[in-house]
Length: 171
Image (cartoon, rainbow, N blue to C red; front, side, top):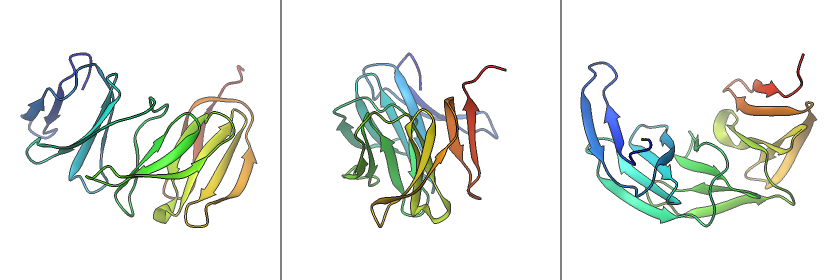
């Protein structure tokens, strides 16, 4: 995906182009594979989110978003849900149907979304520039909040629960 609004799937082992589709009317901003590899998703400046079949490139579903997602596309490995952060909310979207369920909303803008914990029953996010919080999806509440100092970007959590971020302070 890119400025030409084309979505292309390549075989990394052979270098062969598997398929190419012109599904967007504006440059593509974000891409992602579902954890099982059956679907790929694309989001573009046309404010449209699309789900594609990775086998044949067939467009399976399209939804116009009310606002531009402010973070990369993330997925729940447990239940094949897209986790999408908007300005003040985090939602899960079923695949390939794209049915939206709001997980939680915030009083202020969301700084960053890191993704799920092992088992994907929890979700790390940054409600402010100097803290991160662990949200329990089933209980619909925050489990803990950690002060980390000001960070710039790149909040990420691995399957062991380790947190990686880029500190905004200059040394």
